[in-house]
Image (cartoon, rainbow, N blue to C red; front, side, top):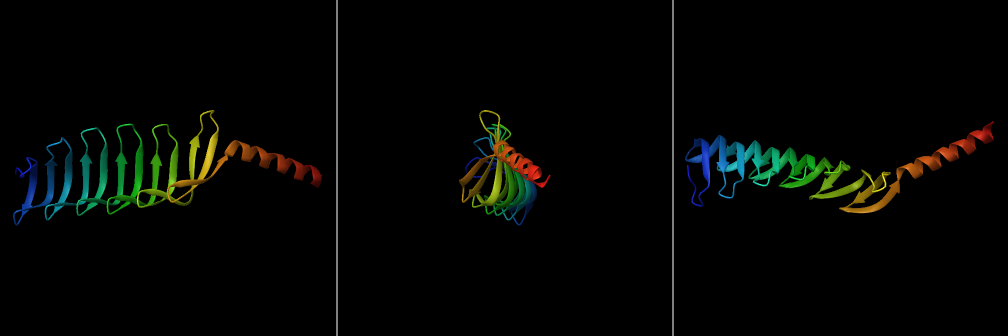
Length: 160
């Protein structure tokens, strides 16, 4: 069936509404394939953007809701929980350089006392603590581990 804006829906119907499995083709090139309920994406489905980005996961009333995986054309990726269309709950974001953040999200922002692991420009690993989408502490793990090693050696020498 062709919609007023030119988009096309092909799939199951109930009481003249998209209901069940179906495919939706937007006029801008985006597509959705999955479950429908009362003309809205509900249940599991896959949304592909014309730029190559994609979301595979659960929907509620046309919004990402529940577990899902979102990938972007630059190869970055988020895998985790969504709430009313936003990253919210526990999730992992991997940037295209393989740096990653795994932890709590709140309203699309990195949040809570959790860790971001990335390799900095000179190849050292860093650990950061984030709250409300902002870095509050950034540490060089090799430096910290090296200092811990020195402290352990000093303590061990004193014991002997």
